[in-house]
Amino acid sequence: MKFRDRMRFVQANMKKNKSRVFMTVLATAMGCAFLIVLASVGFGLERSVVKEVTEGQLLTKISIEGKKAGKEHAQVESSDVQELEKLKYVQAVTAQRTIRQEALIFWGKEKLQPQMAVTDMVSEKKAGLELAIGTLPDKPQEVVVGYHFAALILKNKGETPEAFLNAAKKLLGQTIELEVHRYNGTKKETTRIPLQIAGVRKAPSRDYLQDSSVMMSMDVMDQVEQFTHTRGGLVYPLQEEGQGGTEIPAPEPVDSKKPVTYDAVSVFVDDASHIKGVSDKAKKLGYLTHSVADELKQVNLLFGVMKLGLLFVGTIAVLIASIGIYNTMTMAVTERAQDIGIMKAIGAHPSTIRKIFRLESAYIGILGALAGTAVAYAVSVLVNLVMPAVLSGVFNETTPDGLQFSYIPGWLVLVCIAISIGVAVVSGVRPAARATKVDVLKALRRDI
Image (cartoon, helix red, strand yellow):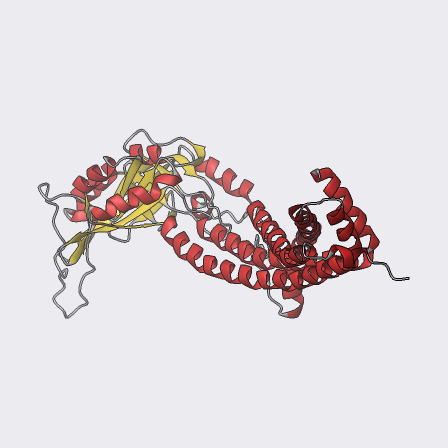
């Protein structure tokens, strides 16, 4: 018997008991939908958490937080930066220093004390530093300022992106001054270093973040150190009156023979797929590393356990639905005993009879899986629309922007459909085996 003929036979028999078959398909659909929706909660929350972790961070960035020096940790030096640059797949290594005193930025009479970073602009360019307006510095005295720097120093009250950019355009190309100080005995001396704004960084990815930083070249740090005669421009405040009136302790003097150390070092790889390999190599060399991949590893482990648990609970619902399929197929064998007897009488092979009943159980599983998938997608959309309103109305809680309660990846649907069909086929194995054992004479005997 051809597959098409078996399929027609199955459909014809299913039409004879529409109500029972419908209820069985409905039970299977409910089990499949429950399995998909339950698992989708884990995928949706994981997706939201991963988005929150990775938002505003470069997936190709590895932070170097120091290196091992025996039992202690040491700062990264110039030779270490060169070593990291030689690693395969490394696109750039940025190394930043900080001015180690309360330095001020002046523009006319206006002043600001922003976060300052001294860096190699060439490396920053290789790392893909993005600007909103302007260009990357190519001269020693040129700097890049944060997106909100101009608005703060100009005391611009506007809070829209247009307002921030308009304020930045006013300062683009303008000269600002970096003021640093030192102590000569008990006397405080100051100097100002002129800097020209060449570019403005892009806005932070998160609206609540403020970027008023100033990025300057290593040449500026050289000028600061020449003035203070200390490493990084470090000075200590004077002791209070009655305690000697001298600086304590003495700052570290500039020593040209001593290697320069950096406060923040970042390694940028050419592709996110290489970040783990580069990070592992850096760890073997003794560096202390951290990247988004490290955070995602913990998140994925947590949600992996959660998703497996939800899939297990959902599978139980499908197994419960299989009881209905088993019952339906058992009833079908009993009701079609005469048809089975006729098929055996005309020479139908037992394997043909088994295939017919297995096909029928699989067909019920397919119908239930397809209906359940459609229902699962509808429920998923409804949950994402309704849950924020429910949390707001019942618990008076505002959900974070972009929070997704349910997400159904394509492969999850395929797995759940396979589970539903597989359970349905297994449920029909026993009834199919019983069908082949039907006695021909008893099956053909008619009541008069």
